[in-house]
Length: 332
Image (cartoon, rainbow, N blue to C red):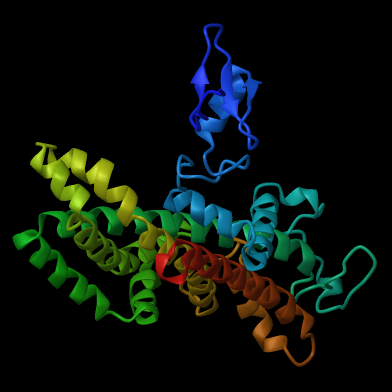
């Protein structure tokens, strides 16, 4: 009489697995194959219950790699960063080398963008102007993110009088118009470097990031895992660094990425008004300001730096929108 059919696997003395077949017989599997069957209950693709779920950041990166808006904007920004560091890769001239005999002339061989009112090569100045704009945008964004993120995060975590004091300070800064504040504060600065402009942007830009960081931290500290860590005796610094910050920093990154393009446009605006960067610094805002009076006779002097500024700002805004969509769980 045949032995009763055993549906479960059993292992022999030599480490071989005996797996039952559909006909009631048995087939000899190697130990490695048996372990593979045990580890992948969902099938050979490994999509069963044992597969680890992706984190928020890996999920966001997975979506960003398939987003054409992110890819296009990232390529544009990468190109801008490269020419900002090494402008001589695509421009061999000197942006301060001018010839008044060629003032306001149009495109010529070797000078595709023509010349400005002082006879300087517009193409070379547009390329070298990217360095100034990217430097101002990146440094201002880092300063705003660090200052606003730290102050807002501490206010949201500790609350109390510190939160109330910081809220009143941010209300005061929100009441100051940015352009008017730039006209007042930068009009007394005689330096031609980018640092006074960056300092002004950080001074008036941190309250927005502070409000974002404060609200994000308040939301994160109410989660169960933070309460569990507090019940287990975790210190405030450990809860802030290990549990709250990684889960509250996403909105700050999104807002900072979008604001980067805004700071580049603000620098050009202040330079156009004559209170931002000053010659001999090469800046798109300075070139737009000097070319505005020649727009009828030589429109190329204005169109090329203005077009470069528009493309740069648009690229950073598109990048920020793509990052926001990837990090927002409500859009999944």
